[in-house]
Length: 499
Image (cartoon, rainbow, N blue to C red; front, top):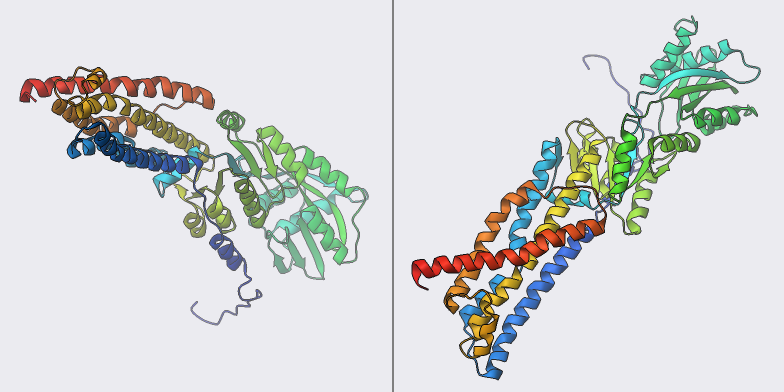
């Protein structure tokens, strides 16, 4: 501003502006813990307390049978039994998940965000730009009975001359292609589109008011000017919507002229990706501002499980909270300030790098490529991280079995010779048995770090199939490997140090 002055008129009441509402909705949002996170935390806590009680109880049992329990051996037993393996590997698993997300050009704000993605039950996606290409173009003009095609063509063009959106420009192009030659009129006022009014247009000189927008918005506008809604309008709008297109109703003053048909194209391969998510047990929900007929048509073509039509920011937030109240974890993609409350409330909020700062702050992931379909890849990365953690947890718990057979005979064999039968590994001495178990316990963690970083290979399968594979590979392997490892360490210790 170099000269003159700018006059700003504030029409919103303090605290009631659009931005104030978005801030209030974000501040009222919070994320819940995942079932896996709660279950693992509970399991580790219970196991640690249980093993501590077992070790402390050994002193009372020893006193009862007349055996003096060595405090050092008891501590060694506790160290071997508590779940130190999975505890040591959890940070590596989290870092690996964030690294895999980063390779996909997704910036995760924490390892937990990636992990939660693997637990997601419901995936909310915007229709425009995610399911469709988001490049809606005007493809047809449908005048109502008694209206000449030239009248509708001219009004649609005038209503879109100052419309900067791709849809508005396509309407102007379509009208020009169909022979409309009217020049630039004298515009008194521009009416931009908003989510609240759901219509846009111009006020021309001579009190000519032209609008285009959603059926209900134009109907209210025309009735407010003293006009009426023609009988064939709803049928025409429904016909356009059933074809999967978006209908825009055009009015000139208090008279409805007809419908503009905006068509969008569903992205190639999106139906197969939704089918893959369905195999993983993830429900997909399409969110759109379109009417219910258009939304239903596109949802059927895309293969989503459900849809939310005529959605406002409050509707998105309410849907997420309703899903979470049912015990489900929700993922959401968004890029605008109006998406910020939903991104903050969702368990996984993927914001686009091209979006607003409010959206990026509210989400717990940012897609550097600004590709809304990237969330599908993030879910697969999260699933792999969960499977990796489950596999290593199974291994960690299973390999405790061998340590009983290594340390318990060392504790009691001298006083209770019958306990020697538990020395199935035939370890050299009690001291060697304890040292071998401790060395194995210390060595196994760094040996498993490469697996934690690489991750267990993920294939979509049922929970039963995943559990069976986990138990066969990491459960049985976790039981057998320590027997071999502890015995080999015992042989080395006996040969080198004569323990």
